[in-house]
Length: 109
Image (cartoon, rainbow, N blue to C red; front, side, top):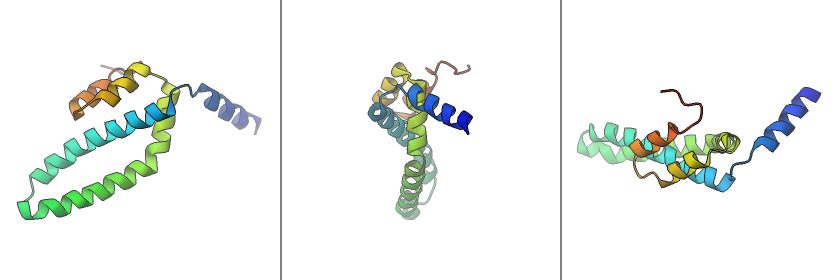
């Protein structure tokens, strides 16, 4: 029990990143990368099916993001990588957002 408490305290004190910036970066990254793939799938459909699929994808994306955003923000805060956070906030395309992910200290080539 003490070990769990100690780990919890250590995890909370290790969170140094700005939660507002982490949430903004996480949401921007998720949005850009998700819609890059989703729009490619939607474009392959017949025109009369695209609007319905776009609505379905929007619902799926919103549900998944809202379910996971707290964990993602927490991980971002723990990483405390300001360069990566700022890059993800500034990204305007999925390619730029993915390049930001490579700025992680433990990213492997």
